[in-house]
Length: 158
Image (tube, rainbow, N blue to C red; front, side, top):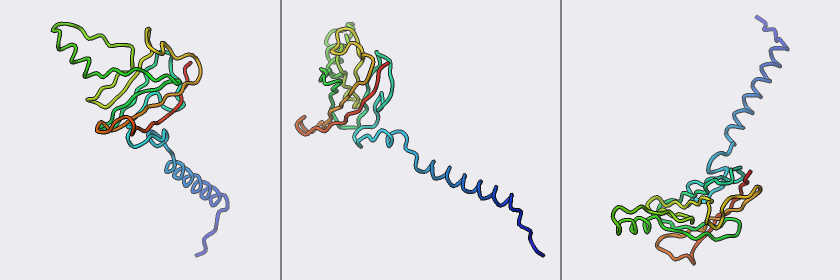
């Protein structure tokens, strides 16, 4: 028995095979999340991410692995940092009083996060339209700041 090759079926089958191969290669080489942002191992996540577009009042947030302190520098301005545990201690000394969150970067030592929200009275009251540069400086809680490292990224405000 002789098999007849159908040229059209052969060409279509070859095209489908090549297409599937290219799709699988693309999926295997795609970078997303942490890999796409090229974050150091110490940083679990950042928001906004590199190249993101945000609103003028958007929060900058950095989540570190356990055991690190941090500070934020945005557009060359080193932001004053308030520790959340110090605010809680002040509230406990005055029963019934509310805690006023200052317009600074807020470091949460329980979660190892640092965040900043532009607002009235802050060093940056809003992100002007255009590109902005953020740097997180981080160091182990057992070390002093002289042993710090940093990560810098850019985002845009619209």
